[in-house]
Amino acid sequence: MGEELVMDKKRVLVCSAWPYASGVPHLGNLVSSLLSGDVFTRYWRMRGKDVLYVSGSDAHGTRIEYEARQLGISPGELAARNHEKIVEVINGFGIEFDNYTTTESPVHKKFVQEIYLQMERNGYIVTQEERRAYCRNCKIFLADRFITGTCPHCGYPHALGNQCDSCGAILEPEELVNPVCSFCGKSDIEFRPTKHWYLDLEKLSPKLLEYVRSRNFQGNVKLFTERMIADGLRPRAMTRDISWGIPAPFAGAEGKVIYVWGEAALGYVSAVIEHFNGDEQWKEFWFGDDVHQVYAIGKDNIPFHTLIFPGQLIASGQGYHLPDQIAATEYLNWIGGQSFSKSRGIGLYCDDALEVLDPEYWRFYLLYNRPEGRDVNFSFEELDKSINGILISNIANLINRVLSFIQTRYSRVVPDE
Image 1 (cartoon, rainbow, N blue to C red):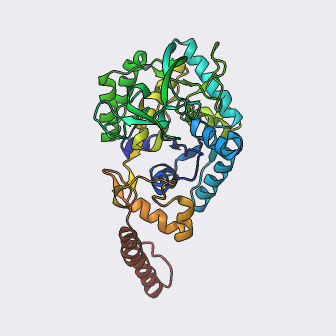
Image 2 (spheres, rainbow, N blue to C red; image 1 turned 90 degrees about the vertical axis):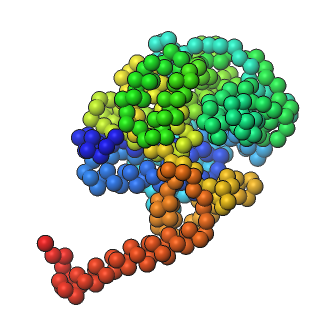
Image 3 (cartoon, rainbow, N blue to C red; image 1 turned 45 degrees about the horizontal axis):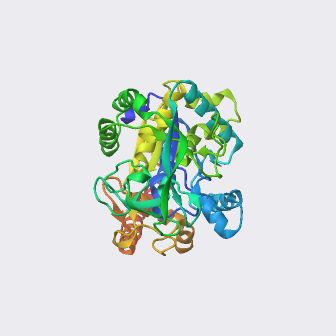
């Protein structure tokens, strides 16, 4: 959406993808969501808009449940501990939220259960019996993202159980060739029959296509989403057989929780409700046309923000304002194109980065090298060039010259003309 159209709006809601509370974000997470959203917020406030910036820690899911078990603590304790670490990083980098919350918030849990019942009443939640991945070694059902294998569409050997990062295809775990448990690294996986509740994306397809065509999404977002709709959307499971999460509110769904991505994006709404303490003012950012919504995310999260999340809002039948702008970055990778991995000691994570350089230097480097059109690899040479060659030698030098000129020629007073 062009800036002139945004200027016609009174309010701007900025949302950034929720960091997963299994650990501290890395530099790629920071620039794609948290830092980008902070810059959008500052910009639109400078332009006089009524801006609200929200996000939070994604506190649920299999990984947190599994890692808590390994540490001998409860999932809630682990999620709360990591939430505090993420908040320290946010504050350390000078990122200013109006509300940075967590999916453990009572407001969020209540909202998620209510909106799923609305979807069910409107006929957009269906049940199916399916076979879900179960690791016999770990003795747990595996969430989609914690199964890896070969993509059946493009042959990429490291595809996840819900999505291939190479070709972008949305997958089901059973489609993977040679699936492996991400926790124990073993292929001792079986697919057990279980009943689950699905969001009927196939039924929502016409409305989603109409929605996508009504938005001026950036190229990679629009093309990717329209291609997925053209290929045919299928119902998407919104419940999981794990104990850590928001209990599924459907009759007969005892012992199941809402899929972590099926509830985290709904936090964009609940975070606004929470910010206003339930006051009706929250609706000014979620209903009507006098608001522009911006979402700062990485490219791997595109389908969740252009299909699943809008699909949920449409299915609720409440008339929610749908996302206007999806600001999706490409990947910031580590040196040589390696993916960040704390367990393998690859990359620089945000808490460690703050020990190396002042946060303002990191903010400039990351934004100057923001991966907008292609993946970008981190390098210390580029870091030095950005800070010493661009920020200090060019920008700071220009500012110093201008200030010196004003001091000597205009007695330290900025002239009117």
